[in-house]
Length: 412
Image (cartoon, rainbow, N blue to C red):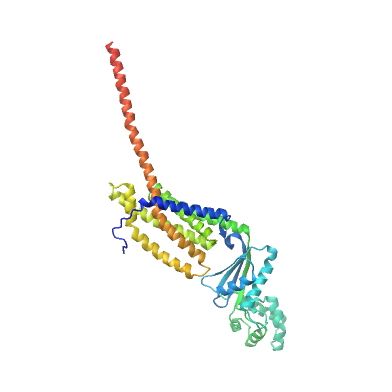
């Protein structure tokens, strides 16, 4: 499919205008970063508490977020774990002596929102010793004769069954315990009378300190720089060094501009945003390589064309492909941005901005850099060629002068 047949747009003729636009975007983004003291990092990078919560049914993320934001001060994120009924709740950094209070506050809020209102203890939150103490007397009243050792062994089997995969701390019905060896219907009836089944269980609660957050920031920077270095080596080997430098500078431009957009619009940079930036690096590089590959092909067949015209022709020849691939991808990530909710907002925003900037840089940044580089090489070659005849003529003149002087002396 070809959208533009015989396209003949003068892209290179407009390069100064778009390079000016890039300079404005870069300066605006850098100024915003300087004024705000750097990017607005998420909990992944600046530290905080991370809680992994498993629900009996698919969790309502918006309801969880609304309930916790009303009780827990500061920044808060609720991120689903894909393919499971679990969510990761992140809150701003608290000191270690406040961890238990923060954990208790979160559980109380979730219980008040989603938990049972019958006043019974939650079976999922009951440990081994608490379970033994709770069922010992009810079992006796129900004429379930067990010694202390048998009761403890039974309680251990029940807790191990509840906490082992695929239940991982949460069962949907007490009848599921019939699969435990030694558990009878009478025992299950006692458990139903003594406990309630909460709709969630806290599987993990930990602190991400500022030191770990700083390490994650540097690891993200290293990952991006290594990706750029690897692409530079590949393109320099596959094409020429000038092509590799032009492509990497264009991708670096895309990354800085996108981060600048995050600062200007006060959006949070998290690990998912870093993943989007790395995706952007690969996508923009691929688009640039397509243009460069066409330039290399045309160099073999259009030897009489100037390099500037050849680049402009190559961009026009790949224009349909660029618009189709970038346009369809843009529609997809735009849908994620508009309808994906707050969890995917940062990720999709990075891709929306990155696809626009990346497609634009392949034409108006990478190609002009390549032209400037080639022009500099050609100027150097011309200057060296132009100076060579002068040296030869000077040498010839010196020889003639020496011969004349020798002839004059011989005549005398």
